[in-house]
Amino acid sequence: MNRQVLGIDIGGTNTALGIVNARGEILATGNISTRGHRDFETFSRALLAETRRICAEAGLDMPSAIGVGAPSGNIQNGMIERTANLEWPTPLPAAKILSEVFGLPVAVSNDANAAAIGEMTYGAARGLTDFIMITLGTGVGSGVVCDGRLITGREGLAGELGHIIIRRNGRPCGCGRRGCLETYTSATGVVTTIRQMLADNPDEPSSLRSIPDDQLTSLAAYEAAMAGDSLARRVFDFTGTVLGEALADFASFTSPKAFVLFGGLARSGELLLAPLRKAFEENALFFHTGGKVDILLSQLPSAHAALLGASAIAWQA
Image 1 (cartoon, rainbow, N blue to C red):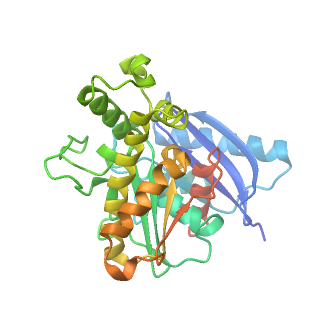
Image 2: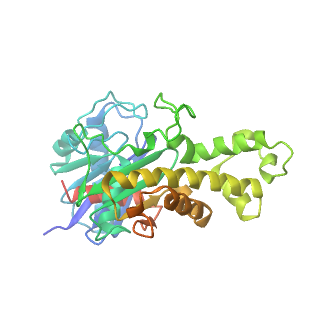
Image 3: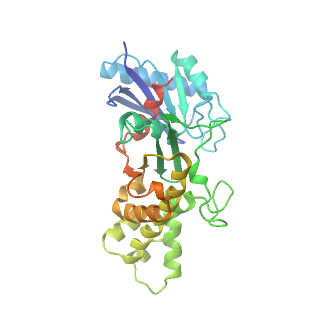
């Protein structure tokens, strides 16, 4: 029996694909441009051609199922819902079209839900039936697993914890509301915090002042903090505190065993985790404190996390 699946990560510019076995080993990879295809069926045929190519080069059989991570992918109905990052009109029946082109079962999800299933299949959440995945990237995504099942809700859109309002009437968010978690704890939110702290403390020396405003990044703040810059360290104290407060509230939703953090910001380690844990303990209900909820870092390799997450969806197709 063929125990290989195809993981596809559809990005706004490029699409990566990989053949993955049941142990989470990536056996072959490829990529195509997301742009420049007349329609999604044409794009799907280009994916089929690339899949055949990488399988032939690696001496592999074709996969038995396909998992797709896509912007606004809906795991319930296989649709790519409203998104501004793709050229094709949406909602788009992505799973249906890909299944017709490949002749294989296909499952489609958004990146955060795919990451949650990937972590449960291959990573830090193996063996866990109750956990919440938090992805800290340009935005903040999440996947909520309860009793071993991904919570998707009535329309497949449940678990958007990045858009829980953590500061009422706070920072404006791209979703149209104000004070969403991602405006504070995403990489973009960290840059906003840097700018605010620099403006609020004009006499405090900081190496971040020498960086042009349009080149400020969360990585620059990390490097400055590690070099002993006190303002940069306060950026991470603030960010970790806000995230810890939010996780304390989220713990009351599903009583998870663990939170799993993924993304570039999570790789800042104790700079973020120390204030996060402190804020969590100070704000969680008493039966969630005292180490009863673990704060874990993703074990998915960053270079292939999206592919592994997508491939994990395929086992459910």
